[in-house]
Length: 295
Image (cartoon, rainbow, N blue to C red; front, side):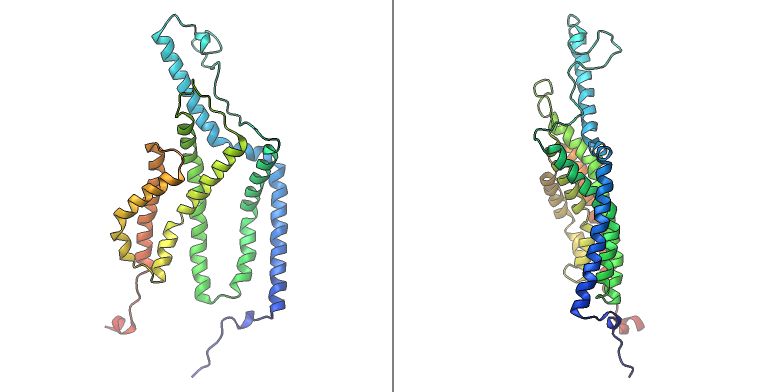
């Protein structure tokens, strides 16, 4: 009988060797993060301008509603002066006299600095992330068996892709709709929306991270089926229960209870659940025994 080979034999090293290897990986990762942070800080104004896009989109919708209501008020009462609502008496001029500002407000002395720093850190993590993950993988992979490496190569890229997809979905669709609803709960003529820079960034980052995390659902479903904790066929039985749970989760993580935003949040989770069922049935299907295969 041939002796069994150890897949990890070529990676054996002393504790000191492991610590030295870890030190090198961490140092290289920190250098990459610092360089990315310097680059992000250099272009912080352009980055902040992109980050403000959801608020600007919501404000444009709010001002469009103001224009529509002002025109309706003038049509209902011709005695009113147009300049009460608009900057000029020209009917073609739609510039509001008191519009909602697209600029965010800074209520604290260090708000601009700390928000710029936080945004730069996020951008630096995004830019240097692939290299940092590569260094981390090079260190961890040395201690993994071949089948474990295959699992990481299969699931990790998909997990990153789903997280980025969820964050982008939240940034471009959910956040603008949520900001619009929250800012118009009371009439704008009564309460004029004015959003602080720090509060806006906290809201935006919390929402994107939460939705990005919920997009990991298919990966978790496949993982639980692969380790035998949950049978793949059980997911289909729990479909109705999951819809109720998805509605509850959407109500918790989204700030606005309007039907449109709730639908935007719940629908992707249901679709991801169905994808998870298909993947779990494919990956979690029990393998046939040799005797059954021969038969």
